[in-house]
Length: 179
Image (cartoon, rainbow, N blue to C red; front, side, top):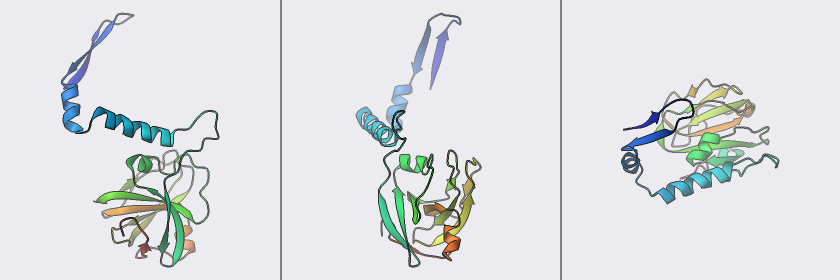
């Protein structure tokens, strides 16, 4: 199944032949075109930056979590578009806040810092709320940092936040979605 371009170079008309693309898309996506478009536009308008405004975008919902008696306010990235954008293009992260990435199941997670200028620490968190490991994330690095074991959550906070509070692997997070 492919899209083939036929025609001549240099101002000639180009024609595109579709060979079974639409049936393949319909098999892959069991949702209607209007549902796909609604999801696309919803994600686009919730994350779009405009040229004339201050560049802010709508933030994901926030919630309070507690890590071994230390409170933290987190933005919850539980939709795929929220997880894809994460903390990209942010110039600051308020004290006592972070971003919690929520996934539908356990798997090894991989993070990078493309378009993210903030130095961060990422805590890979198991489904039961236990911090499995903490990894430093370098600003603007495209080198992936992968969890050692399958996890359901990843918590990003400013670099050194965990160490300054004596938190580390084995600490428990309460107030996670689904508890």
